[in-house]
Length: 212
Ligand SMILES: Nc1ncnc2c1ncn2[C@@H]1O[C@H](COP(=O)(O)OP(=O)(O)O)[C@@H](O)[C@H]1O
Ligand SMILES: [Mg+2]
Image 1 (tube, rainbow, N blue to C red):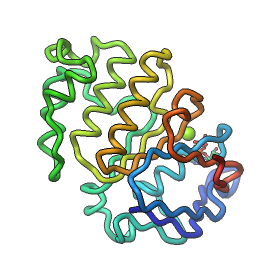
Image 2 (image 1 turned 45 degrees about the horizontal axis):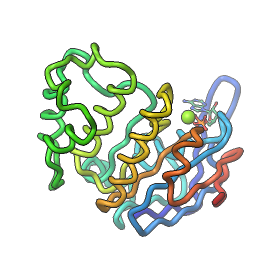
Image 3 (image 1 turned 90 degrees about the vertical axis):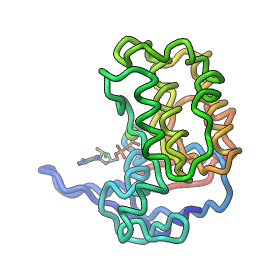
Image 4 (image 1 turned 30 degrees about the vertical axis):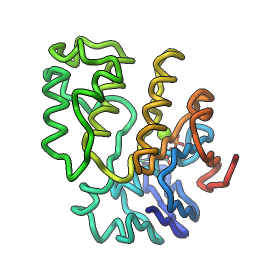
């Protein structure tokens, strides 16, 4: 599903060139929930962005056998990337956000109603996103990610700002997504999320190591 070979990413800034990834390799052929942990600035976000095709990289990244940088449009159907913070349009209601997501669903087979119910969101359908709590908002974001039906789901800090109950719901949701055949990779600091992960990698100074 995902093959990363000797990937390097450099950022040019006024301070000079920063090598954020210094030769990362990773091969994941099964749908799993994978966590990447590591100190701030170690390169976690950069790795997710590179896999999502959002930034230039050296080396090779293949999703479902396709080189990411040469197949950007195809990647929109295969990879879902959720950056830290907002992706939702605050003016839409929960139902409208979910409907919007189903329009760009490429062959996924998730029932919108049952997913919302399972997440405890059914009664929030007519609420606008801006009126939700952080935990509710995060769950709607994840619902949107799942409905979009991508094979690879990359989420940056999925539980940031959530209390333990909400963090556990997110953990269960991500685990369920992996059991439905998606490869889910999260960048996180959250020990709760690690309990749900099948594999944990540690990132340090732009290098990735198997951790657990
Ligand atoms: N757009 C950017 N321009 C310049 N440097 C960046 C940029 N984004 C990240 N960096 C640098 O790259 C390194 C890795 O950052 P990042 O991938 O965001 O780490 P993490 O997500 O683990 O906190 C850090 O040194 C950071 O300052
Ligand atoms: Mg980050």
